[in-house]
Amino acid sequence: MLSGIAAQVGQYLERRRAEELAVELARTKDEFLALVTHEIRNPLAIIAAAASVLGEDLESFTLDEQRLHLSTIVRNTQRLSVMAEDLLDLARLESGNLALQPDDTDLCTIIREAVQAAAPHAEQKKLLIDADLPARLDLRADPHRLRQVADNLLSNAIKYTPPGGLVTVTATADDLSNDILWTVADTGIGIPEAERPKLFRRFYRASTAVAGQIPGTGLGLVIIRTIIERHCGSITLADTGGCGTTFAITLPRRGPSPPDE
Ligand code: ADP
Image (tube, rainbow, N blue to C red; front, side, top):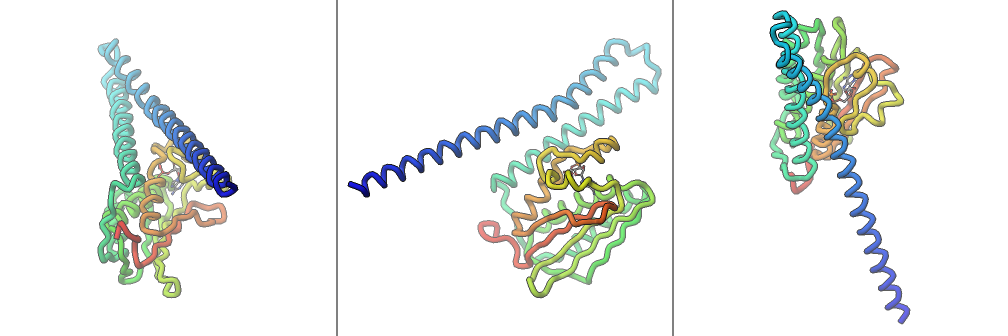
């Protein structure tokens, strides 16, 4: 009889846990939906306002004023479209519906190509990019996803560093742990220490970026972290002693674990 009661209590506790989990999941989904709606509303309201101002009184504006309103519309449309792409990418990565395609990969080639692609943008902003890399660093990884990480970290470093600054990329192998350590550092506006724990939350933007009115969606780092974690690696913010920002990534050379492998 006692074992019967114990089994019933066990079942009851299991049901309660399942109910709690369902409530938790619904709350997370609601919060996420509210967040997305909020983030979409803002650019949409700006587009609607600019379009209606133009539509109502087109002739009263000079050509330059018309261009200004149109560029506001284009900028906010682009923001929405980047957000839609990022959200889709994130949803696919997080749900596991998007399988990684691991291959024998050389991280140094990926980083060099990303640096080369970012060079014109850096030059335009009068920034130097310094890449300190060995000849090659072989690992098992999805090369397209790692390129996405490299592009995103470099474009952030360039975006958040004022002219005259320096972006430094390094990658080394730790033979003891068989991991690769990859860093992307800049001498830019930095991220206040108190805000760092929130950085990998969806849509989170640091006060330094908001104060500088630097455009962004706050989704890139969440995507980067998901990609790195799918490779069984980790990404952290290294301490820079108050100057600029340094991201440090650790990647195991053996690559992702099944079912990605
Ligand atoms: P986005 O740049 O589109 O806003 P991210 O997810 O890439 O989104 O980054 C989230 C936030 O982290 C940014 O809004 C910015 O506040 C901060 N951030 C990211 N990279 C840097 C960097 N290199 N320097 C300073 N702040 C950064």
